[in-house]
Image (tube, rainbow, N blue to C red):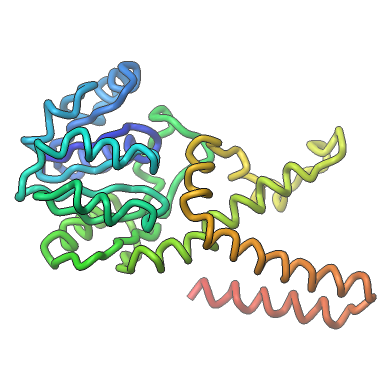
Length: 275
């Protein structure tokens, strides 16, 4: 396929790298010339441009790797160039806030959204690596889509090396992501910011490193994601606060057996996720 990737950051760059290796022809668009130069010099793209109009009409698939607030702007700017033979998708971490508007703006092209459950704590094309997708979850967000475009995204998922591929509604996607992705980032950020000591780094082990890696957060992207999914995230924060309070009360009340029960419950639930 001829594939246009709009936004060559960490994810867009990793897509370009992996899909080019899979034999697709890759066109890359970004607002930074230095990013485009990097993509060409590292053989991620066959051609690049600051202007998406150079590639839209010759692309079978358009993958939008932009921040949530910019996806609709892109579709509005270029919708006159879309055609009915094209499929347009995005890699955004939230869906409900924009997907129905995106479907209308993309017409006559077919719009189907998806979310690669992979990434790194660092951003930018220089950190791109298609290996980050190996065995990871690939979520396809289905809004009355047909088998044709669903199969195209499934093929993209397979070409990039993803493991489990799942279909879901925008609302269910956002609810689950509010827990598995956004809440975990909120916890990591809060844990790091709760530090009151000057020499914490001298006491860090694997537990702290594992829990706080994602606290090295892209503040522009994640503030958009948090607010776009505000309702679900607030609900998950409330649930988390409730669980943390249960643990705290066991300590306050010197309830060792209650604390053990909490640990056993979490251990068993975590084991189930490995199956």
